[in-house]
Image 1 (tube, one colour):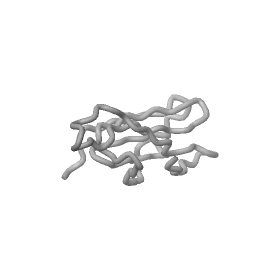
Image 2 (cartoon, helix red, strand yellow):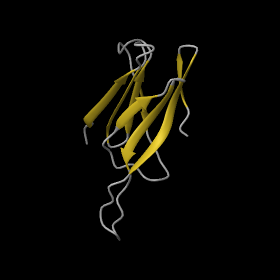
Image 3 (cartoon, one colour):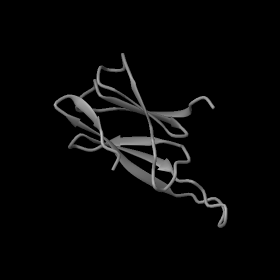
Length: 98
């Protein structure tokens, strides 16, 4: 399946830092304003069911919110899981996957 439903964030404190996500479990990041991108596949103990949303806090930690895998026994669950995915240190984006 091709990536779809993109979400992208440009860090307001450092516009060279950008993070993007697409369904179902793709995460991309750039440290050069989007000229080049690194790709990682997101994993979560909650399962990953897509619909990414990304935020950054004032300390430079990036968070990837996503729907969690639905529960077939109880029907579809409209809940989110979040992962702290990156930390900007000295201009370097470091995957941390909390």
